[in-house]
Amino acid sequence: VRTLSEQDALMTDGTDLSSSVEEVITFADGIPGFPGCHRFALVDLAEDSAFQLLQSLDDPAVSMVVSVPWLFFPEYAPEIDDTDQRDLEIESPEDAAVFCPVTLDAEEETVYVNLLGPFIVNVRSRRGRQVVLADPDLPVRAAVPLAL
Amino acid sequence: MLVLTRKSGESIVIGNDVVVTVLEVRSDQVRIGIAAPRSVQVHREEVYRQVERENAAAVASAERARALLKRGGPKPGPRPLPPPQARRSTAEGPPDDTKPPAAS
Image (cartoon, rainbow over all chains, first blue to last red; front, side):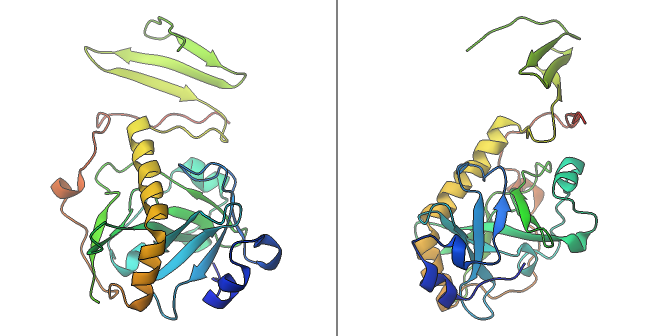
């Protein structure tokens, strides 16, 4: 999934972003906690950053940092169930972009990646869904120590 | 809340296309089968709520995370998955739970 530059985001921040954003990702069901947010854009935080901003185009106040999980957890192997694969028309791993919500704790010492609820996006149709994986061992908060 | 009493093998119909069937009743566990159209997502509530809460936390910390991670942030690199006992942070359904069948 192509990401936007920070400059694009700044230019379009706050108002109706949809008209100026080509690469809209559509979450038909919204996402858990934000059912009204259907359209998002991925914005690069910085060049070569492991992190992007997933910005809602329906509600400017809704955005979260996301990361491709394998940069930090190379053994991560999310099993996307048949229903999700069918709905998103994902036929091979290459069809899917996977990125996970990132949370910063109050002390700002630890960055957490949510491995239980990744976003799965069909890279061709740009339709996506935040899935809840069946593996009970996957954490919603997997710590990534900061190296600032 | 509507409360219905059902026996093992009996079902309830919700709307026009969702059928919930009680498959098996044991002492304090009930196995439930759900037939629903693909557009209806079915989750164990506590797991769904956990993801919902994490999304709220991710949105709440987005500004700070964005500022911090823009400066530097973690260096990408191989990092093993946390050990299972540390990763099991939620109450889960029984291990023999089967996935609910999705009606076509």
